[in-house]
Length: 573
Image (cartoon, rainbow, N blue to C red; front, side):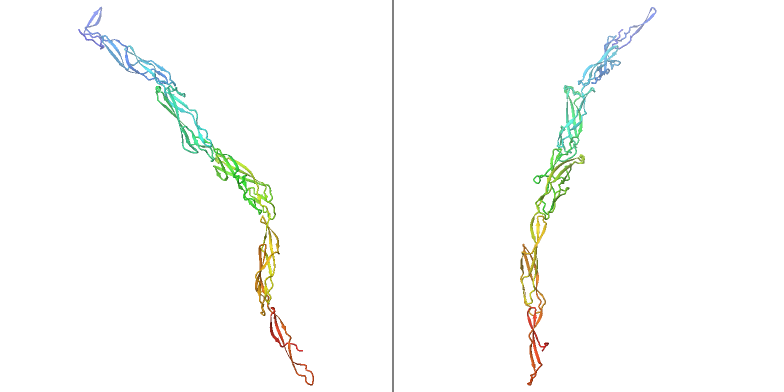
């Protein structure tokens, strides 16, 4: 009977006929004409499969598991003598060993195999293993941080200049793949650290004009303008740290970190540190005040003081300025001045101690040489007051000086003459006529004594020594027998000249009145007519008498006129 091989088919015994044999009471079933059972008689050690596992972190750790994959196989041998390859996907039920590595800390290191992870399993009674190498993750700089530090500047002087940055220590922290950190830079074997900075100025203000990339800031001199300390705009410092690994350890690449610090720079206050009072113009006066227009006239007057001072102001900035005008707001503050004056009592002089004005009295008619006041002492005080923002502090300077004032000498100077005061009297021209060419003149010329002071005193008047002249003579004819009252017939002027002055007097000239004054009688002319005496004799005692008496009218002028003769009124005896 022919039966084919079972090959790799696992089968039980196969019979075609069954023979039962009984022997000694035991019946046994037996194969007859059958095929032997086919079973696996032996297996080989399984192989194959895959095992993957994570690397051990740089921080250290243990790997005691992995991912089993793929298929494992083993060769089976059968009763039939045939063989096959038995495969199983992802064998289970196995165990793993452990692979342990410590933390790399701050040691830079590339990934390194630190052991083998083995998965041990049993397949068909045979132990198989799947292994894989376990690496520890490389340890590199993974992060860079810059912390701490502060930016500051030393104050810039008021004179101006540069402010230099001051940066307190900053800490550079390196973080590694391991999670460890260090503030110490790794060896140059592994890389290099570099640091760069850039400064910027937010704006230009308060005299701070520019800043370099290196942080040097410039401030201008504050000159002659006072003020409190002033600050720049915000200064920003941006620093960039860079870790550059070498090519052999470039597992994480270049790492950078930035740090930003800010500050301002302060420029010191600018104030007046010294104020000196000094003489302004030494060619005008060697002291800080003087009196122009000297001397005071002998007539008296007042001299006002003129200032000749100046202030020399020195500032914190080093600037120095000379100022001869003291009143008002200057250089951001206020500059004021005061002077006080004193003088010992001096005859003829008085001093206004507030203004310094000196008055010399009128020397009137008291003669004397030029005179000098007492010594006038004055203190000039200059004061600069800083603004309220600087506490209104003050700085002062003083200067003392002395002066004297002179008054002109007083002396007799000249005599002033007045115009002569003249009186003139003249006679009347007689009625008979005549000429008036002069008269009776008296005169008086006043005299005034003059002094340098302008004062005067009266001297006695002059009544002699003058020259008298007259105007044209006044003539009048005789009035004859014309009766006329006293009549103005002209004027006569008498002029008196003396001491270059003239005075005159004009008077009216009259002709005396002409009047009939008296009558002059002549001797009467008598004619007698009487009877004859008789021859007888006798006497004649009466007769006829006729007479005539001439008459002449007399006038003041001396002229006469004939009146009719008188023929009556006489007495006959």
